Length: 277
Image (tube, rainbow, N blue to C red; front, side, top):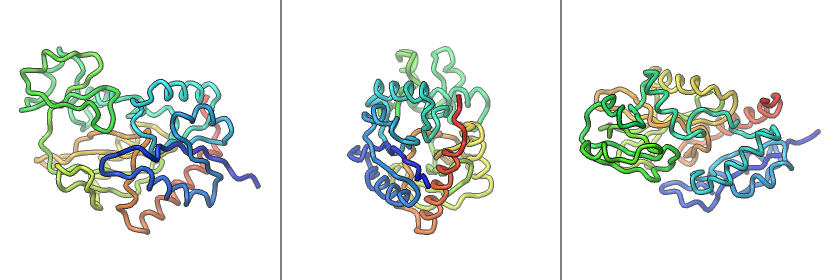
């Protein structure tokens, strides 16, 4: 019986603040080897190696902006050859840049209001400060905060502007395909990566699911990041559908085992499904 082979893309040495990319991917691949033949690969090498495997799994590969040209070449080659890539490359969220925040804002979804043009600044609520971030940013790279009087002088085109939200905490919801796995939150806003288990309410899960459904990814791992405002509402911060860090070291053994089982089953379904044209 043929054992599927996976090229598992990860940057084991990436210096992520508050996270250990390498540890998480060593753990995951050690468990996935029960069902798959796996080779780990640095992101810059993925394009040259991917034809030798049944599928490519993109995991903790680091911010794409550090290797933009190589990533674009990988996407083009994978699309042309109909290579199976997990997560699939048609994701509408962070995989395609931060522009989806504009679409969600315009559609009235519960998201931090976002604009990209000076003539649209009046669509934002008044705030003491505003967050300015690159459209292709990740991991808070390039994020700055400015006062309202400086907004008109910004170099628009490749930036997004949002009000700086005074929130109580951030919370993340983790999914495999369309199945909720677990949630974690940061009780102290000043310590974003000091996470603890979070028990979501039915309303919390309905909030997260609307973004999973909006993205229409039929396979893959996604993380819905949100903030809880002082008034109690949840607002989307980002929908990570490219290479979401999972913080598996912070959940209990049963939750971790359930996640691995869910990812394994998802990969089998993915390999059995016909690739998109």
